[in-house]
Image (tube, rainbow, N blue to C red):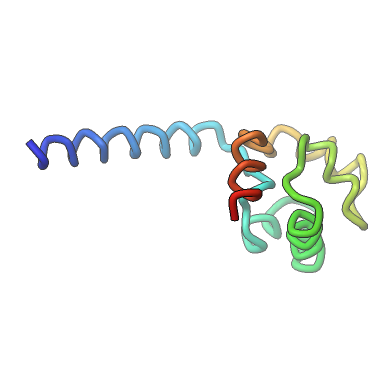
Length: 99
């Protein structure tokens, strides 16, 4: 029974991962610097600035909030909007406050 439960859980996790990949969006509240640097118009320095801003101010509430990061403007956001998400900000905020 434990084996069957483990297989079932593994299938659920795989399906969730596939769904996230299929959506093809980068969660700016969870992405590391390497993933952020792959975006069109973001280099290593801006990727680090995004992470520093996120650490100092908490999760982004919307993709538009990226404009609060020095060096990122509306043109970047408009160009990359379809590739970006903030995920479930409510859960991210609770996790951050729990730590």
